[in-house]
Image 1 (cartoon, rainbow, N blue to C red):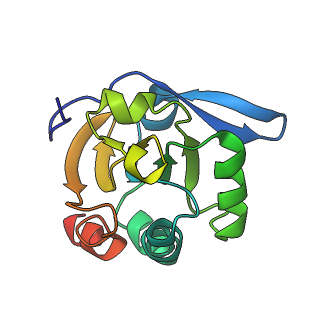
Image 2: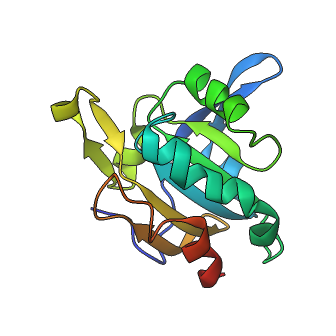
Length: 161
């Protein structure tokens, strides 16, 4: 079942790159006691994700945080090394947290996994944005096609804050 407004995020573990290498970060570590804008993309470095979706959140990070948001995070069904490379390549340092969902556990747990096997991509995440306050979903915006970043984009999300 797909997560809905008012639902608490399920407990899963992401991987993040730390100074000591890959490290686990639980759902609570990311969301507990914080207001977080979470964006999910089908894959790091894929055209819409890299050129359209993520850049809007990097550009508008200060405006988003000025609305009372503690953090902006992006997740994708990619390994921590790919997500770390994407963070560096996108100039998002200090603006966006990169959460690797390598096995798609989070995407599956929130009911937003995408079967990309027809394109050789395996299981991925649908494209969406959500506003999460202390682990509870306040707003969710799921795109109807993975190649779109309209309802889940930074400008649309800013209007919800």
